[in-house]
Image (tube, rainbow, N blue to C red; front, side, top):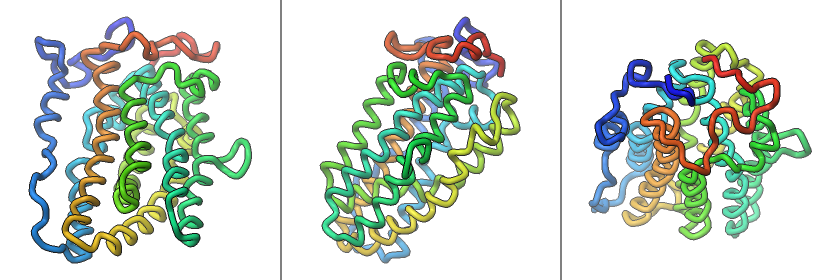
Length: 294
């Protein structure tokens, strides 16, 4: 265990390589399939298109990332869980910004009424409500000072870059691609169930109240995914449009995967925390300083 609570290869099961690149990341990068170069030469049926979308999740969704396996299996220490909670906050906070960007582009009032619920889900109807507030409670539950989390000062640059790339993607690509990129929600109930069960079982500092964010998402995500999937299947009516939808989902999976790559590299192995990123002990409430037990 290093001075920053960074687990070594005996604890993680992932050996370090001589050039300081964690072997797990090298192996994972090699095992992730590259985007296919071919464009579908025929129009897929709705069932085939849905199957192709789900196959992307089965191979690329971030529940497969080594960092998540460590998180869910109780193999991270408290500071590593804190790093995850802090960085994930930025993603959560930018989701309603992404959705507002997409909402402004929708030409149909009926579509806007459906999509605006996503913003309400995250921002809430009033102070103290919504998914962002519940994520702040999660961050506070693992010891962070609320104002420090809100400042986003300690997040990894890779987190910021990947999240902002997602917002720009939704703003600049076609509506079909923007909506298709949200289809990672098809896969989120599985990872949420694994995460809640694993963290409650393996971390004494985690409570059901700490993880309250995920309770709502178990119903919100399937509702949102059903709408988006129906939209994509109905509007991807050429092979090229279907390819765009599939590529959009691959892109979103990469956005999520990249954030975990950065967390693993900075806080697990080789433990190279960038100079502008959070370091254990920073930004914590006074009563949480020194609390590093797993």
